[in-house]
Structure formats: C-alpha cells, structure tokens
Length: 334
Image 1 (cartoon, rainbow, N blue to C red):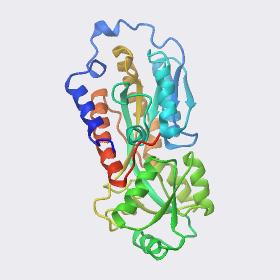
Image 2: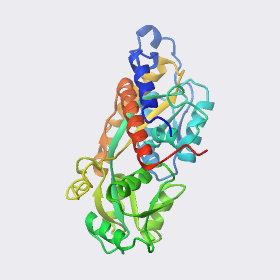
Image 3: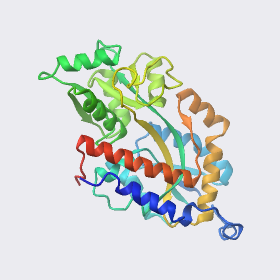
Image 4: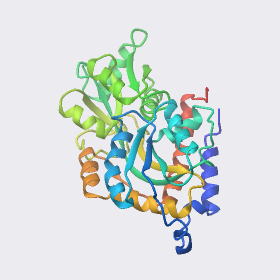
C-alpha cells in the first residue's frame, strides 16, 4: 500500500520551495509570451460526455474563448480513472494550447494505478473551479426514504442478494463515496463499476442497480422528474439545491464527509506567463453570469482559486484520498 501522505508531502514541499509555476508573474515574463494563444486551445475532458466534468467544461468554454480570443475545443478522452486524458495533456507541447479539467479522480489515481507519469512533478493546477457534495440517490422502486431505512434494507439482504451501487469506475469519487458508506455503517453493498457516469445513471433509473452517488448537477434534473429519489448528501453541510436533505453524517453516520471538486490543469513546464493568463481567464469565466447562474441552479460552489491556492487544495486531496484508499484497501493494480 502506498504511503497515503507521500503525494501530499511532495505537493507541500513544492509549494514551500516557491515553485516558479505558482509564483507571481513579473511584467518581464508576461512580455515573453506575446502571441499566446496563437491557435485554438484544446480542453481535454478525461470523462464521458454528460459527466459533471464535461458539463462544467462546456459551460466555461464560451467565456474563456471570449477572454483569450481563441476557440476552446472540448475533447473527451475517458478511461482508467482519467489517466488516459492526462496522458494526452502530457504528450502535447507544453505551451498552454492543451490543458484539461479533472475531478477528484486525479488525486485518487495514484492509489489505484501504477501511473505512467508523476502527478506531482508532471502536472500543475491552474485553478480549482468548483466544489460541491454528491447526492446519495436510489431507484424510486426501492422502498426507502431515509438513510436509516436504506441501511436497514441492506442489512436485511445480507447473505442474500446484496443491494448494489454503481459508479463511474474503480476509484471514482462515487465509488469511494459508496465504499466509505459501507465502511462506516458495516452494511454489505455490491459495487458495480461502469465506464462512465451516464451509463450507470441510466441503469440506476431503470432499476438494474439500486443506489448511486452523483454530483448535484446530475441529480437535480433527475430528482425533479421523479427518475431518482434523493436520500442524503455527502458533504459536511447541506446542499443549496437540496436544503431539506440531510447530510449522511446528520442522518446517522458521524464522520462521513466527501466532496467533489473540479480543477483546471496543465503540464509542468508551461510558461508562467501563459499559466497566469489561463488562470485569469478561467477565474473570470467561473464568475461570469452564465456560469454563476448554472452553478447556483445546480448547488455547486464556485471557487475560482489562484494557482497557489490550487496547489494547497491538491496537497490536501492527495492526503485525504490516500487515507481513504488505505482505509478501504485500495492498491495500485495495473
């Protein structure tokens, strides 16, 4: 098992050393990249279309394009918990014309895979875009309305046909959310990993699986239509889009807390002036009227951080997910 604090400590060491990619950009450096961007910017989304990462990326693309003066081209490249998409970013020239948006999966992947890259050395965050809880939902045919009823039903099925929960893949945030639920409650749930969020949500609505964790952005329209029933939220506080829904901790599992966040990233070695321009464009996009309205509707908190704040956020995530991976017995497998 990998040391759960190793990646977090390395992030903090880089931060303490004042890594050049997160330092303020002097005017001299800013003048060294006068032609950026000189062509369309590829925004790699290492998730399937319709995922929360994909949806937010498409929302910010228009205001980013207006700010930078070039089209933003979204390229979905899903697989291996985001690893394939990150590799695409690393193979491209490190000039800021190929960047990406990732979820917490980026911080989880070192504890699942023997990565072909070093997530601390090879990737730098541009900005944390947003943060928000996941919603624990069930198929409407399941005879439960509360967390305690769900856990009681799961216990009654022990030794028989276990209740199932789906996820966007091994080590995805929904997988860890379900694993943490089983760990803290002691109930038996069968994990069914899918290759993307849209597929497992389809099976959840049809009753092929029983339980699903998903971002509020995905849950809101499905709950409104009656396609899914919400039970609780995973964060430490209630979600604005589900104000009457308790947190899992409130509902009877103290200590349960899990958030989902999105971040923009680039390959290490991208010129500091380019990084600064990207950060400014992304932060402005996150606070644009259209993105603000979308985030409010979905119950997502806008962050729009500086690069230094993003480095600290990544260090914290590596530590949190490393400890969780150790707790539930995840190990790099391939």
